Length: 292
Ligand SMILES: NC(=O)c1ccc[n+]([C@@H]2O[C@H](COP(=O)([O-])OP(=O)(O)OC[C@H]3O[C@@H](n4cnc5c(N)ncnc54)[C@H](OP(=O)(O)O)[C@@H]3O)[C@@H](O)[C@H]2O)c1
Image 1 (cartoon, rainbow, N blue to C red):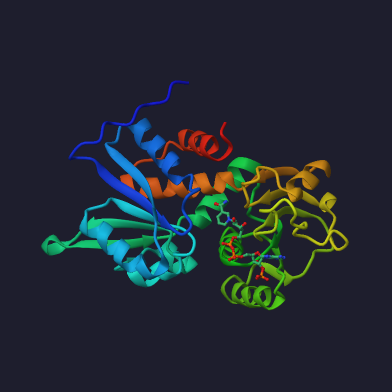
Image 2: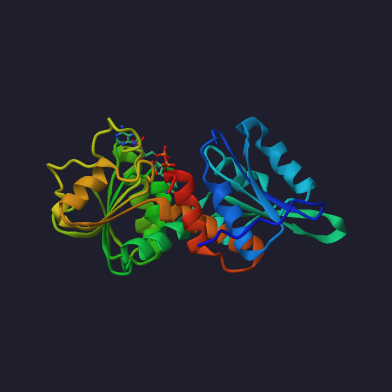
């Protein structure tokens, strides 16, 4: 299929960007610029290497230069919570900001509104890539770091029936289990491996990023044959050891590329007020990450 062309850059070109460190391998510029081209927007999306100590200045600079918005990635999502004028309910709920929209306010001022699109990105990817129905599902979640904590809370808001949390540092899993018990009493939550089958196993640890990494689960305590579907938030490599083992065990599998696409699609919709061209964005990300 022929690629749509970006508008030429001129004095009317609007800017978006992603701030992070390191940022060199980000697929977000390819993904968003493809979407702008598909919709004929005279916009550009750039990646900026920003050290945490310069984050406040970078956000202020983008605001002063009338950027449409920003994405924030590692290590800025928590820091940015205190650097915007207003937090959308999504950023309040997940306690982190990955998207900022700059909006004109009274007296020529520009307000920075913080959003978080990561949780919705994950839920949309689970539905699209694995056809999982989250309501009433039994889920084993490995890892409750930044992404895992958000995933646990999101799964609870989606009314999963039962959630099992496993984390190297067990106290963190206990803490999040306590939070979920208080906020979502209808979700049955426990720390440790399930004794019976689950509908979904979700890896939110960083184990699998390196080829020499061990499996993120203890296969003496839980067999992959007990999982209907397995999702790994890691997307590079495209198939981690966990996903290869899950495929061999007959599970449905998906990696985290769809999560990346859907968090970006939601950010696109926030900035433009239009639905995102998700298929175009996915193709662009796959091209950028896998050279497809
Ligand atoms: N697809 C996407 O769009 C997307 C988005 C966000 C994140 N991710 C991926 O999700 C993963 C987690 O990211 P994050 O931001 O949550 O990172 P994080 O906050 O640093 O959390 C890392 C998690 O991995 C666990 N872990 C790290 N090393 C381990 C080891 N050697 N053995 C067992 N557990 C280990 C940590 O356990 P402890 O608590 O014990 O340290 C923690 O649960 C990463 O692989 C990241 O690439 C993907």
